Image 1: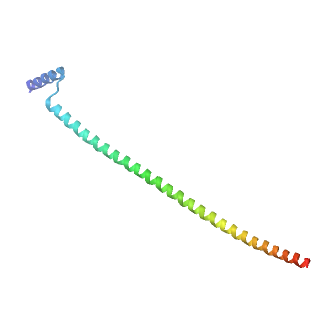
Image 2: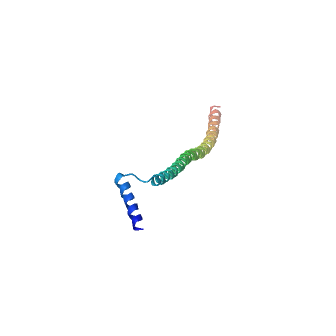
Image 3: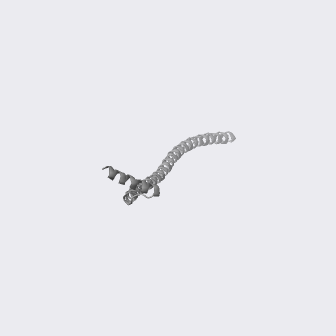
Length: 114
């Protein structure tokens, strides 16, 4: 057992001193790196998908905001139209009153001339 330990220790020392790693360790590291690469690629795809969803959401949000502004403008314009119609009705009533007064004055002036 001690001879086996010494042999393994010598082997380890020789591989450590030459900087060479055992082939099985290299394969294991390569396998781990490939797994890490796959995980990173999946994460990258998720991030790309999330970014695209965020961009789409921002676009939808902008459209919704424009629709809301258009609706507010429409309401404001409808209110202005109502106010203008009301002002026009008041102006028409005043015009009728002025015409009536004018007609009365014309009649009075005509009757006085006779």
